[in-house]
Amino acid sequence: MKTVLTLAALCLSSCATFQDAPIIENGPAAAAGSKVALGQPVAVEGIVLTPMMVMEDSRCPINARCVWAGRITVKTRIDGAGWRETVALTLGEPEQVRGYVVNITSAEPGQIAGQETDPAAYRFTFEGWPGTRPLD
Image (tube, rainbow, N blue to C red; front, side, top):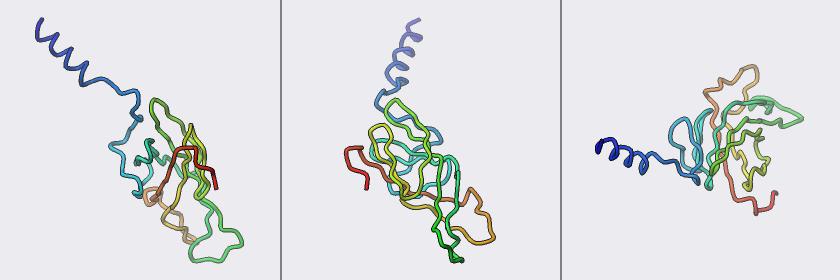
């Protein structure tokens, strides 16, 4: 009985979840400024961003001339202290989410005319900051 109580006490001290910790899945989060693949989390200013799916990639191919630059939109899961939200983020368009401003600052590779991009090839860089900073 004493062994069971000791194990229970150890679990309570080491198995507890922390209210102020972001929810994270898919392994440890990469450091801020890292280029991450779909499904790979990255820690940015106290939150964790995980690109889940490319919803749209209408960017002008790098080997073409276009009248419109196009855009890339990524379904992104955002984990904060005790909350989770999924939003559509568009490259270069900051978005306010639960007191934070988040933004995709780069998306690679660029489109190539006549070729479809393999989802595993995408890499994204994110930035974030507390929502007190004005959107540009």
